[in-house]
Amino acid sequence: MAAAESDSRSLFSLDSYHVSQELGFILPDPLEELPPYYQPWMDIALRVPELVLSHELRFHINKMPLLSSQFLQKHRELRLAHLALSNMTMGYTWQGGESNTVEKLPHNLAVPYWEVSQRLGLPPILTHADAVLANWRKKDPDGPFDMENLELLLSLPGGDSMRGFFMVTLLVELAAVPALRNIPTVINGVRCGDTEAVARALEEVSQSIEGMTDALKLMHVYVEPSVFYGIMRIYLSGWKDNPSMPKGLIYEGVQPEPMEFSGGSAAQSSLLHCFDELLGVKHEAKSGAFLTRMRNYMPPAHKQLIQDISLQPSLKSFVHQQDSERLNQAFQRCVTKLVALRNYHINIVSRFITVPAARARQLRNQGQPSEGEMISRAPAALEERGTGGSGIMIFLKTVRDQTKDAFLPETSKEMKHHS
Ligand code: HEM
Image (cartoon, rainbow, N blue to C red; front, side, top):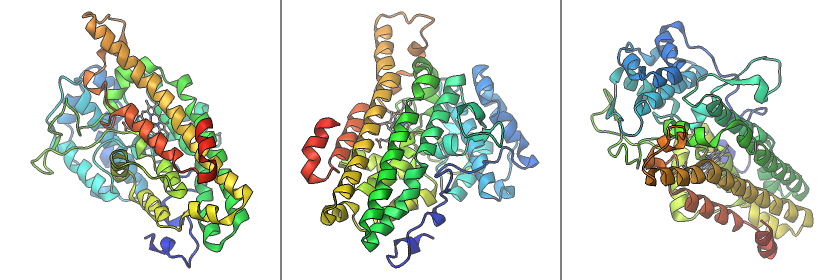
């Protein structure tokens, strides 16, 4: 599909990677309804938060009819089906909290879920591509793409905070669109030695990355840390390296052995993977392995884009050779803004996970978790770990520090000092 893009004779473009000029990796106009045959799925998927609360979701899913996935044809139908089946799966698995998990997903859910996942090249678990990229509609179709005019198609427990979490992440994806659009300009400029064009494009990239950080700040406005930690987080977690589901999950009717998949996380967003490859950020073995594994949780066309960017002639060497002050500064600014974004993200994780986790531990040690404290009900198994099952802070700081290593040598000391 994208082989031509790595051919140095043709111009690099985003056309064959399912990337929209206006929306980047966001799925344009996600479908809101499936063909009527699939109504039994949508009826339940739309009610997941309320059915989880009343502990009736498993009951409803167990008696759902087994539907064939063969009447799903278009890409957008498959994406909505994957989102709906993923939503039901997360609710089904975690309805009873960490102490009352399930060993298997019933065949009437597992079989079509597996088929739809295979056709999309996505894993059979809720991914960033489902919950964020394909999970939005505009209230007023002619209105702006902003918080007031957007709503989720499907949700999970957590009310306004769950909505805020997915929507703010969507706005971060939107803020990155100018950066994404300029990647081909950078690559083509390097290929033909156009210093000015590369410098200009990198200036746009750095500005756009700064815009992503600004959008990320909205997390504080729209998401309540105690709700995120105490209620939402479990529904985003998976069954790989998770002590509450040590064997993984059996997808009944697919294969008898259990399978393991990581939970949903913006580590599955293709954005930072693209920037890292463009700027030549090299990750250390363990964190790099996690990030590489996350690429299998992306739509295949997006994963291919990352791969093809990585095959291009080195931008960093080009900048180094050109001896242009403007180009030099534009490159350094991109790295500075990427480090700043990762630093801000670390603050967010500290506020939404580390601090509530410490409080939850304290409450448990006191022996009497008070009724009002939502966080004390949070699953203990998730305390030390990321939603994807990684040692969070060490991982995030390693990734941040590796980003600093992408600075060009002359100014690297100074820039490291300021970031
Ligand atoms: C309340 C908000 C958020 C929390 C609590 C959070 C938490 C985490 C955690 C725990 C990880 C570690 C890996 C994992 O467990 O999967 C992670 C990784 C990551 N997150 Fe977030 N995240 C949040 C929002 C976002 C947003 C909006 C973005 C933007 C797209 C983002 C981008 C990333 C990236 C790219 C990684 C991989 C590490 C890296 O490349 O620096 N996160 N996040």
